Image (cartoon, rainbow, N blue to C red):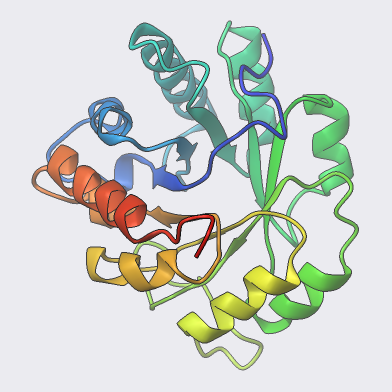
Length: 240
């Protein structure tokens, strides 16, 4: 099995990043289902605490659930960093659409070689040289950029860490500049809250990603719906 969403035909407007360490009282699979039913379009499995086997099994369960609820053609399933887990999950029959990596992680070319031409590859650049990377990187094998953080976030304390060890957050004006500078879609996250969505949706980026705003909520479905509605309601129309 390979990807079900073909690169170039994916939607990162409402993007959930999730692992067992992020959920409150619900299972990872339940939270993913709640988010998808609320209108989320992309899911990234990310965990630093579970074993490779557990990650493979979780990815396979997520793939099965997405198929069972009839969303195989509109929701992308990605895994953070772990090319080996993606390949193993695919061997078990899972439909995994791609990978999200950091600029200093496994090379993009290696991911493309093993995942195939149709798989989605997203890349987060180092905060210190984000603008330079987005405007000068070889993007031929990349499908979208992850950018941020908008705020400091406890779910990934090193997110936005600069060379001097301080966290560099991004203003809405900077995000708008990134959107104009990039020829690839951009999804923005890092401590994003519901109150950020109206302004973020008007920067020109292609989507937002969240972790705790949905995964850590008492009612993930309700919070996911609020986020999707805020994004859609504030997004500029084509003629604006």
